[in-house]
Image (tube, rainbow, N blue to C red; front, side):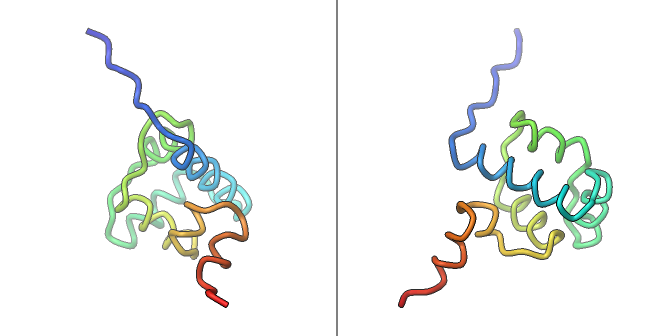
Length: 92
């Protein structure tokens, strides 16, 4: 029986795109990101990063936190649209 495709909603799709975009902007390969994540004590193979970015695998909260830390950003920056993460921290 073929494996059912993973259903990923709009926030998951945005997060996957943001991970890839930020990784590329920093000049970091998927293998390098996997190594950075591993150095933080979280095992996430480069193949899993590839599947997350291609929207073939969900990014769970542990993965999200580790990827964000490896990229030097807040996990909220991966979840919210550009600028919204900063605005969410300011209540006026």
